[in-house]
Image 1: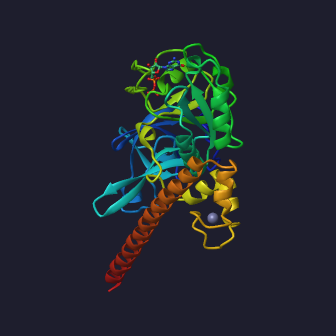
Image 2: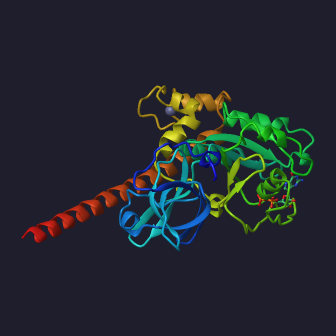
Image 3: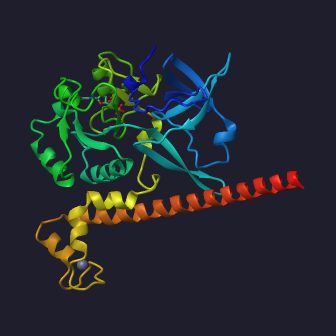
Length: 353
Ligand code: GDP
Ligand code: ZN
């Protein structure tokens, strides 16, 4: 028997109808790979629960679900249990967008940038915003530490953009800084790696695994490009029992693709700017060339950088756009439910008549 607690399950409910909790470890089209108390299983969604009912989100890698056994076949997934954290994206579909989760129930997000041309504070702010919105704890990992003499300036720049966030420097080449990751990689916990292609995610995973499970495609450092192919399960368990969720969707996640709560996340990441906003001389200040503008003063006095201010404006615009889209989806979904309920009622009436 497998103890699902080792896979991060903390639920205690014992469903009466014999349904079992399980965790989604990989998704292949409409077939799900799961781990439950009796081992690895495959499952499919129960159509009547999931289709046409957007209040039941499709499971993704990392989700806890309830399953029913089906003799001699794939089990049936009957419920997605509430998520403590998740990343999602908006998928364009004919007639609008739908929100699709791409990873769920992770504790830590390693925001990875490598110590060469890949280091970019503005991208860091973007990733921090996404992390804040997801519900998990971000940790900044500056990879390829062996490529710089002294990482102090990078650390200083990162910490200015990310007050209160832990920052680590690692190298998969020399194994420097790897031990420090285990503060977060505790048994049964789950984490995700967020970083552009080529920052060294596969190499780090291989280092943590103690074997090459990922293909590292060698790149030239001068153009900082790289690609890898993943050929294994998407939730990977390290020798110490920590889990890493690695899904292709995560490599591309941008800002406006994500949804709800983004504007609050932007506010949380740029608190010092938000604190200033209400303090300009004119209440309708556009922070351009008005006298007594708190933002302009702060920029001129070097309290905030112009780049950070501009990035704040950009991310706020994107957040607004994404939230509008999500709101439209929710409204459409509510409309669908209304119609479904109405037609069920009509059907019942017909049966009575
Ligand atoms: P991924 O695309 O994020 O998975 O990145 P990879 O792990 O495939 O690595 C991309 C490139 O960076 C490869 O050429 C690696 O050899 C190189 N690389 C990865 N980690 C390190 C490191 O710690 N130091 C150095 N110098 N190069 C690294
Ligand atoms: Zn102003």
